[in-house]
Image (tube, rainbow, N blue to C red; front, top):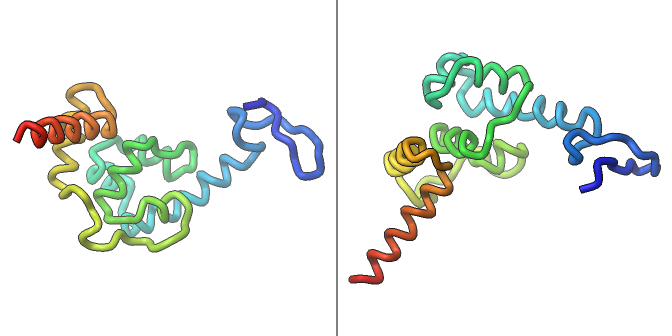
Length: 141
């Protein structure tokens, strides 16, 4: 992507990381914070960190709008809170995931995440391995 983004008026302005105009990323981060707080029912940063098995500093960075969670953390937030990931990211759609719509139980998701961490993989990489193994097993039946 070109490092210069064009504004509607046609004037060039440097973009952050080639994707966002100045200030847009800060707006995205700031808009995310209240949804994250709401997802955890206004729990303290320490409680959120405990529930996500991460550091207080990581949660403080999210709450101070200094950074956004990576994909694996977003998945964990959605899993732990039952929040709709699309709503968490955009503020659009239903806030909560409908009961019964999850493919895996929370315990199964937790086990996959633990396997991924031990193997140095992402959640998605580990999930793909588990799915392939299940399909291979099913083919042998």
